[in-house]
Length: 142
Image (cartoon, rainbow, N blue to C red; front, side):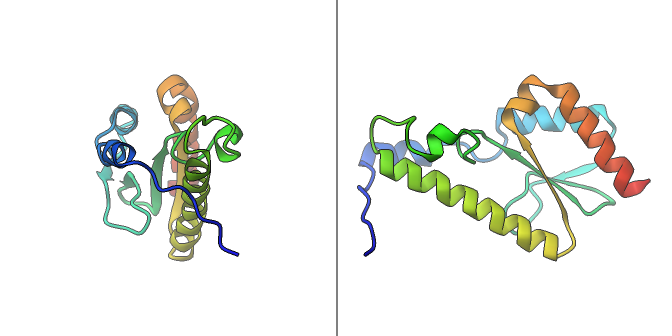
């Protein structure tokens, strides 16, 4: 039997429409990091899954993932983090994770190297991101 979930209120739907999906602080910070490393890139390449960046001259795609929207924290996936609309948010975040996995598989099958970075690392641990980017570039270009 298919489980029905409470539809979000009109207010929730309107707020969700206003959530920025491009030129976020997260993307701007990653862009600054790429520029600091003199890495040439394309923003928002027209590819499946909507990667945030493509490293020019390589098969590397970069996604800048929000911990919330991409379900990093288990308490959000289980619904524990929510007081209202718990089942709606739980379902939404599980579906987001599932879509990320499907996009990763499809892109990898097409020859892309998919790299996902968490917002917490991009914003608070830039050295970790820089080291990982250098390693990925060195492994790819040599």
